[in-house]
Image (cartoon, rainbow, N blue to C red; front, side, top):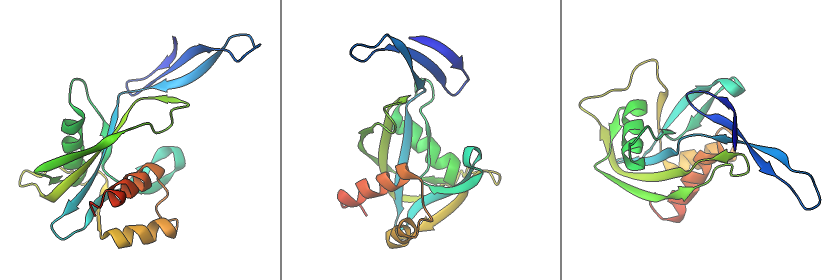
Length: 169
């Protein structure tokens, strides 16, 4: 593996690859820290989402709180931190829903998904006004946004479907 390009967030690596009968040519992939997403539900049975600007597509997306696992932090610790930083909410209990791959043909990392029970506003709220916009929706409202193609971020749709299949909503 040869590192072709590197930033503080990710690197692009060339991995030798050959199909039968072909010369070895590099296969490029993105390496980055593992990431987390959390679907948290309030006592009012609303799920916590954020609306956030995404520069690569020059648009705002509706998605679940998520982010990278930093340094030696555990995936659960990262999920708790991201939920608090992005929404100002905390959960007493986090249930791991699984470890997944988002785009394994090009990205080398693991996506850890958690469910947060009885989410509530933190007294020591960390969320800043310049961060993502907090959005609270009933699951039926979120389903409608998916159907109407107003929620197009596929990992959030997958996280929601997983929580539905596990009867957590």
